[in-house]
Image 1: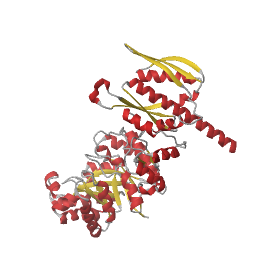
Image 2: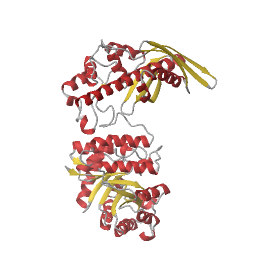
Image 3: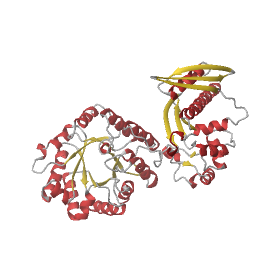
Image 4: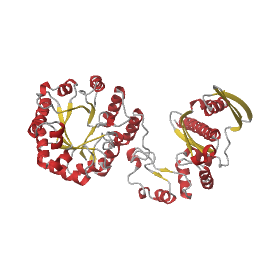
Length: 521
């Protein structure tokens, strides 16, 4: 594989997305993860623009970087000012970053109307700024802002700005589709021309305003670009930047270009999820390669085909990106779904298809609630014995308090417990756990991690069926169960009961496997 240098700008351009604000500590944690992946450059921020980015570079000096070069971002010098007197360029030097990325104007509209300077002065600003940074021992990357717009206005001048950066000593000249409106075939043509005209490496920086950022970046690499900029999860201004979480596996698996440290492609999804969590944004579970649904099969015809020939509906082996094939149960399922689901979860196939279809008609949804389907199959096994059974329950709401009482059969005994909570579901959850704790101490390790409510048909008002999805976890596994009822309390209780029972089953399974390992060890 020939290499493509990945330049991650999540910490700078990515944070320009509306609704994202990362603390300095969070930015450094993301940068450390990118370093482990082997990303060539991580853009830490713009030290001349705000105190937070200046602090990041101060703290980054104390960290050990193994594979990544931390880059500081800034602009060319201002018109009429010597580079050594420009506060922005001085801030780049003071940041201590080994690499500096500066942007300059390519479009004559921007030169004359935004900078309000002359075309010749703009060329000198670019060359002087790059040369100044190089004279201080910095690696310099030049971002040609609005290059493709500028090339449409005046191609000769646009190329002249790139040549000025190369003359100043830039090691990479990056063509920026800043407005994100250029089509991939036009990008490929312009990049190919730049690769012929310039004596230095050419890169691409694409925005996604037309939905083409990933395609445009791939087109640029096909035309000769060896440096690709983008962000994790496509975060960025307006519609975002080229999504590295999609682009990197495309480059490695489709174009045969090495982007990350060998063996780390499967970890990219984890880093993308980690970044989404720090940004307080939900990870897109339908994202290519790394989404939970990226290799999920729902239609019966698809499931039957994939079981016979996995590549029939999967464009790559999911294992190569750390993902897995999943078979989804729903009202669209067929016999193949049941058999595949049972095989995937190590269960004996059971005729649950009719029940799934009936319950989904009532408001249940089993697409994500795999634990609920697994329970349905286990409950049909001849040797199945319920670990507990809720015989009755009651919830009492008062001013400033909520009480719940449950009657639970556990190992032949009927237990009656009560508990308070900050809501009816919380109170029921606490009361149920109290009843089970003595017989099943492992219930303490089962935690409710997420709780989702959806009204199935809002036109029914307060009589509408409510669907409740509950995520539980135990520190190793995470599973989802579902309940549906006109009563949100009843729907929640169904999901709670199934979630705890599945957790107890996992605990027993883990315990048995542990004993087996000891016996054979």
